[in-house]
Length: 570
Image (cartoon, rainbow, N blue to C red; front, side, top):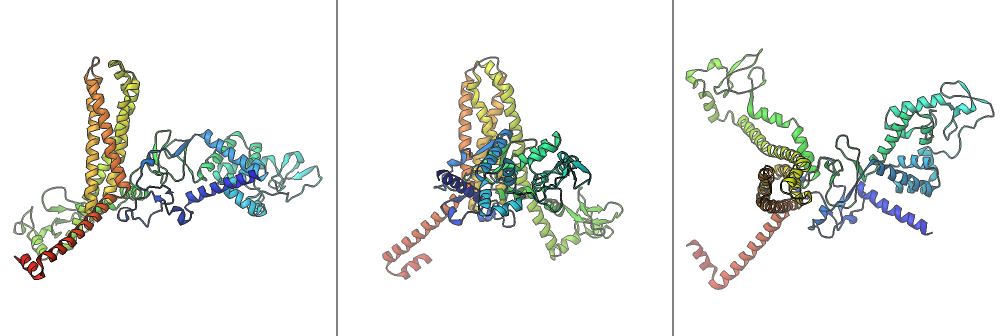
């Protein structure tokens, strides 16, 4: 009885985990929890995009962000994945008293969820067997004849050359091998392989694959089976780095989605984009889409070109005068300002660098709408360019810092150790500084995406954001300068120097200060710059209280309202 209780408890826990990752938990489960996604409606309102908020974190104090730095995931190598897969197969096989092959077929059908297998099996075993293809008795019974006819090639073969799945339909070894090989080469659909008979739903397990398929196809099938374990499990995802074969198992209820694979690639487990803390997944999706969209091209065309009055092709003005000539075969000559034919222009209209007709028409409001649209496009383009250039610049700086970190670890540390007679273990402060630089460049990069989507009318939030960003950026530049430039003199030194100890103290101090700056920045952005809202509310409340006190005091002292009014007029 205890074993059954243990089994049910395990199923309950796994069911909760499945609900957690699928977003099917009841609302009151989250009543004391805090969503990781930024709750600022203006910044993160993306109702039309995919919903990334299917995970919540159950923490007692929403303001306590210390848990975010804890590692809440496990990087799995191929042997780890295979061992977990074998353990799950063994567990289902033992509990349901079925073969390992049948257990594997069941788990694949239910996306490797043990709790779902148990629930379905104990609810209606017969229905599960029919839907999955696990027949408990043969559909076709062999006769006592020495030879049987293959159902594919219709040749007669001795009974020992005929093989059947659990259904009993007879097929020869050659036809089975060809059928299995073709299905495996078609892709992962081979994991749901059925009997070749069109009317039969009997499943074909890995035992027949191992018996009849060539070694190359066995390896492919095994690879598909392994990948299905990760891709069918909502708790586990492959690392998206090119060529990486590691997977990441994520713990339910953790705070940050940023994970680092053993291949050194960091990514967001939720949306599988590169790590982007403190910006939420919805903002990242919008930013990446904007960077790749044609809308900015159209904005540039609208802001920097005008259509030819004749053929309507957009033309960019690349020289000083207003005389424009369209490209062949059009070759229409016109005025850049008023878009009129150049034949109607000359000295009397202002020459090559002005247009009296345009100025007169502009005063009458003839070009107001087109100019307004062009100005709006230009402002929008300039604003986007401002944030994109800084986003891209920090990305390049981060890549350069990663290269410098690698060189430091492989070449410079050993050289410094020899020059200054210091063990490499005592030079970790340099590596820590470069690791901090790499991480800060990543955070700073994504703050520019955050700033782009911060509403213009939120002046208080924008000022607070720009202040925090500026402080963090200044600290990072000082740290980067020290680690990159000031270190060079000690790499070029002939021997130990007293200044190296001062450099150690300075670099370690800058690393600590910069880390604090960025922790404050990250905390503020993940809270949706809530400190500004709280401060504004407190200020409003204080102002109201002061007004009430002042009103009461004036009435008591002056006695009559008329006196107060007269003093106010004076």
